[in-house]
Image 1: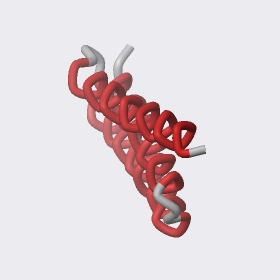
Image 2: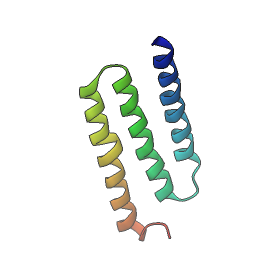
Image 3: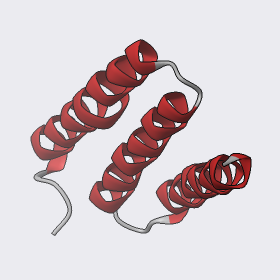
Image 4: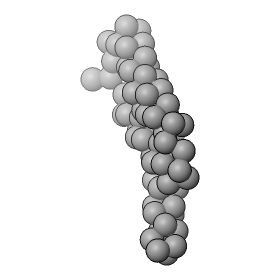
Length: 83
């Protein structure tokens, strides 16, 4: 059973790292914001693996939903978004 948990930890942490790197290296800002939201989802999964469901719920609400939403609205208002 501990091998399954260790594998899940490795998958979640690698997902966080890959999506964060993608968020930094995307050409279009909208794609970068979407990758940032995916990073928040992986962080919430990491908190679930660490048995912290209250922190995971907060991370999903703020890191995966609210922050990308605010950034997308700001992009649309500033310059019409990426085409």
